[in-house]
Structures are given as structure tokens and as C-alpha cells.
Length: 204
Image 1 (cartoon, helix red, strand yellow):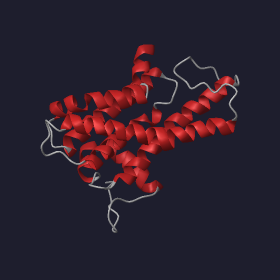
Image 2: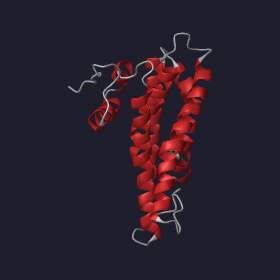
Image 3: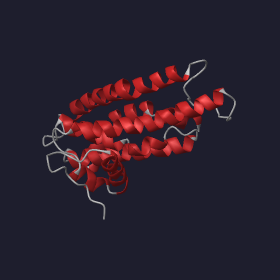
């Protein structure tokens, strides 16, 4: 069975193999993953994980939009970025800015909202670092959210939201109903608007 292996020098393993292992674990054994794979003051792997998910999701959207602009593929107008006359370098810069600046900022702002919502109902809650990690790892299914298929995006964001509720329950010691109530607004912000789940539902 796949195990989450800690780095002997402290914290979790880094690198591509550990990244893939974390993705697999959180999808198939989320409760165990959030119990053993989220630790205090170890945000870096989670941030890299979320950045990688956004890179894949946004990269696929940009690539397909660029092909559509050049008439090589035909896509429905399903919330794709407007590439227009942007050079490949400019499009790459936009993608880089989204991955490096926009995604981490949105992650931390949403974590701040979640911390405020948890304060009155979770006296034994984990710290801010753990909340960041839960949100970051819950984005795992959204690697597929950039595909031009509304149903796939809806499935991805619903799965991500469910993972976020489970992670919130485990890390902050809450029942699932209380975790769902506390996580509803942050999940809507990240999965509904960040990964465009609301737009996909509207398109359907």
C-alpha cells in the first residue's frame, strides 16, 4: 500500500515523486492523508502542490484557447481565456503570474476567511498552516478543471469541495456537518469561482 513518507530531516518529502504520491493519496484515501500528511508549520509542500494543480489546469485552458484562436480546434465558448494577438511569451507570462502570484494570494486570503469562520465553532482547531495545507491538497481533482467539458469541471470542483470538507473535519476536529457549514463559503470562493465551477453549472 502507498504510504506517506516523512522526510527524515523534518517535514514531508519534496520532489516530483512525493508530489504525485500526495495527489494519489488525497484522492483515494483522503481521511488518512489529512490525518498523516498535514503537519504544523510545513506549508511549502502544500503550496507547491496547489501551484502545480493550477499550472496544469490553467495551462490546459491556455493551450486549448490558443489552438482555438488559430482555428486548429473548435471549442464552445466555455469561459476560456482570451488569447487574441498575445505572443507566446506574453501568454506564458500571464500563466506564470497566475501560478506564482494570483493562486498563492487567493489561497492565503481564503484561509484567512476560513480561520475566522472556524474560530467560534472549533476550539480544538489546527493552526493557519494546517488550514492552508487542507485547502491546497483539496484542489487535487481540479487538474481536470481546465478541460472544455462542463460536466468534467463540475465533477472536479464538487470532488475538490468534498475533499475540503473531509480535510476540515479531520484537521480541525469537527463533525462532517459542522465542517461542511464552516467550509461552505471558502469552498465556494475557491472551487466555485477560482476554478469556475459556478460558470460550468450555469453552462449546463
